[in-house]
Image (cartoon, rainbow, N blue to C red; front, side, top):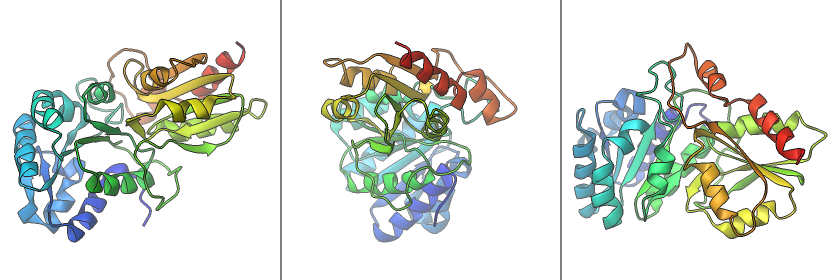
Length: 308
């Protein structure tokens, strides 16, 4: 069944995986109704742990469960998953290479009504800087389903960021998720647009509006690990590169692509949050527009880089 919300896709997939694998356990920090951890709680109450507003403790308990052979998934808003529990994630899970899966729900600007305190624009940078950590940002609900399945199969710490809102799928339903493998959604030879998360769909819309420019659109759903040779191959015949992310332009997708291309650089433009915190808005599109995260901003970036 195709979903249109990443949180619903995540919760439903955890329930399905829990049926097959009795070692999967889920921990929530008083936000199960939003993270959709409540779905797992309803299905398997003996394997769901409500930890209250105590993300650090939740993370430490998950580390302990991992050391007993369980596969714990911890859930909270992205801003709390990495922020409030960073010390425990670093010292115990990352250093120890423990098999803990961390879900950052309502990432980016997707919690539009609650403003800067709840809008997480730095999580990919935080988790990408941790050795041993895999960092995922699926494009849509379809890809979320497959990414969560792969997370459960892999051994080691992993972080996934999810959007709060409904939006159309741009990836194929049921396509197996491969960690570290970007996916070309549209072929082109002049400009390559690397996009992640919600911005993938906007990048596709932008590319379709520019028939005079041949634009390749690449869905980068694994932020780490990122293999330089794969990125270099994708851009080898292109004139320039644009990155698009619902994240600070410092430390996220743009930084990762720049690092991958440092030995064979291309001119680049970055579409992302311009090193500022979020703000409250009446709806998701308004906050995205205010911060320059729209189809029009991607089009503008493509035109700008194409003129070099």
